[in-house]
Structure formats: C-alpha cells, structure tokens
Image (tube, rainbow, N blue to C red):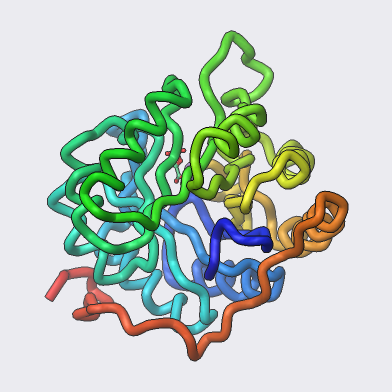
Length: 274
Ligand code: PEP
Ligand code: MN
C-alpha cells in the first residue's frame, strides 16, 4: 500500500477487535468495499479504567488471521514501549493514538523499528507539537510516518471533537509526510462520517480511516460513530468522485499474495502468547 502518492486510501475496521466472527465479517466487507487496509484495536486506550480494554494478544491473533483471509494489511495501536515487539509481529503498521502522541519513550521505541507508523494527532496538540512528535520517529531513522488528523478539542459540543480540516493544507506546506483523516473519532456520530470523509478528500487528505462494525448498536466501543457494513460499501465510490474532482484517484485493491510474512509466532486461539 502506498500512502501519500496520487491515490487516496480507504482504511476500515472496527474500533476494537471484539471477537473472531465480527472481525472476519468486517474484513470481508472492508475488502469488498475497496478498503486497502484493515484497522482494529487489540490494546485500547479507554478513558475509563472500567471500560473494555481490548482483547490484547488474542486480538492480535484474530487480526493476523483476518489479515490473511481478507488479504488486507493491518494497522493496530501500540500503547507502550514494551508492547512494540509483540505488536510488530502481527501488524503491518503501528498506530500511535492521540493520547500517546507525546509519549516520547513510545515514539523513540517505535522510531527504532522500520515498520510504518500512523501517528494520530493529540486532541490538544498544535500542528507544531504534532510535527515535533513525528520528528521523534524520524530522528530514530523510521521514515515511514503517516500523520492522522482525528479532531481536536474545542468549545464545540455538537461533535465529539472538531475536525481540523485546515490542518491538511497547512501540513501540505510544512511537511512531506502523508496525512490521512479519521472522521469517526472526530465526529462521534455515524451520519457525519461520510460528509467529513468527502470534505477531507476534497481538501487534500491522502486517505481516510473509518470505524466500521457489523452491528454498530451493539459494539463494545464507539458504536455511535461506527458505520454499518452497508454504509461502508458506498463510501469508496463517493470518495472516488471527490478524488476525481481534485485530480486524484483511489488506491487499487492490494493483491493478497503480495502481503509480506510477519514474524509470528502465532498466538494460540486461547489467547496466550507463545
Ligand atoms: C483509535 O483509532 O482506535 C483511537 C483510539 O483513536 P484516537 O487515538 O484518535 O482517539
Ligand atoms: Mn474508536
């Protein structure tokens, strides 16, 4: 997958890996909808310590299985420096979440790898602070960094966060790094995800990452902002029309055979890491 070229990417998947069946169903739908990567959290940064924290290593095993089934590379969050080695065995791209954008020991550890990184903007981070966080990764020699605008905290309460669309053209001038947009966390509401995704493509984003769930109303996390599988199906075509209007194309589907082998070892279905 090339992020940052002429073609715009669509990345889709659940907020959280909740189990194998729902991930398989979402993986199939993502592939059919023209997504080129699968997202899904195994280690989840939750605001409350009493909320579901993710399936951890078992979630990684499920991601690896659906990666192979659907033929989609995986992006998943790594929350702590000591998790990097484990998550790298299963993930094509390491996500650093908004809450960890300024976790400098995590940035250094991920920077020491050569795995592509999705660096989300901290919800209260300025563009300068975000670029300095990216610099931590680059300074360690990891050059495959993709920025992700996911909404910032403002006085506005009608949306979960406020999507800073201006950040995209600003970053275009300030950095060579690709920028994608997460309209799911930015808006918090399913009906806003499509319009914001299209606006992001119009303003020059290199891709969109959206939360998708087979049954959003029963999702364990972020159901209100998750598209159902039918809504996902229409998104790529709408994005393609806007991309065409601004001189871009949509990224071609990836060939399943071209997925590189990851390190393993496979985690057993029971969830223990071997
Ligand atoms: C996520 O993408 O799973 C996530 C937790 O988003 P953010 O870090 O932007 O809140
Ligand atoms: Mn989420």
